[in-house]
Image (cartoon, rainbow, N blue to C red; front, side, top):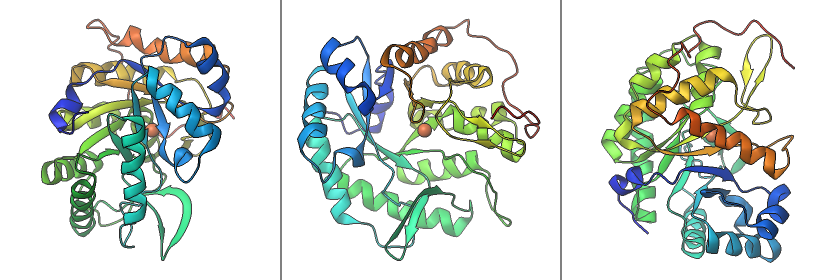
Length: 295
Ligand SMILES: [Fe+2]
């Protein structure tokens, strides 16, 4: 297992899937050809029995990476060192290539709000996040990989836009990035910025892997629901991201209304046609808020 960011960035594991309970039987019974799996870390912490047995079986056959939702890296609460120790123990058990979470906060005063809440992109928030990312990396003894969030509001008085914030954060900490292309599109649409311009300013030498997912379109905004196929605009953005990055491990997230395993795997493998030099070059980034309601 490598712990250097340079090595993580170089590892293109191919096209992966989120490991979901609905697919356990297919994965264990049919042993499908999947390049790698991402696990939701918290699903395998403080538990035993079937989930951990399944994880052991999967980890014996496929590369695995860990993705969490409870690090609360942006909060003003003290870092949860017991949680971090559990993360590290889980990684040792399953041999995960890296550990990721989100640029967000999820609670304060010991309360978990069970949502990925946005940080203001200000200098004080950046300093706070840098200090905590360094502390986590010291404890985990590896680069932390952090995901750009889907957001539904912007703060007044910000010092940076998101690409600038990511540039500053990665330069100061050496952390990795998980670039969720769907999140870029959702935010670009909700906030009215150019998604292609965003991607051109990403610090690609820190990007370890991509997320792809579907979302829901409402009259006033797009919501990151992970319950639809990937939309054409996100596929085109992914093609651009692939060219700009030179290629990274790519994972399809599907977390609600999950189709059967074969359908999910087919959707993920669509990424292959965008991972070529001749990937489509159409305009991908919305600059207007959505006007169409799909559901
Ligand atoms: Fe994601």
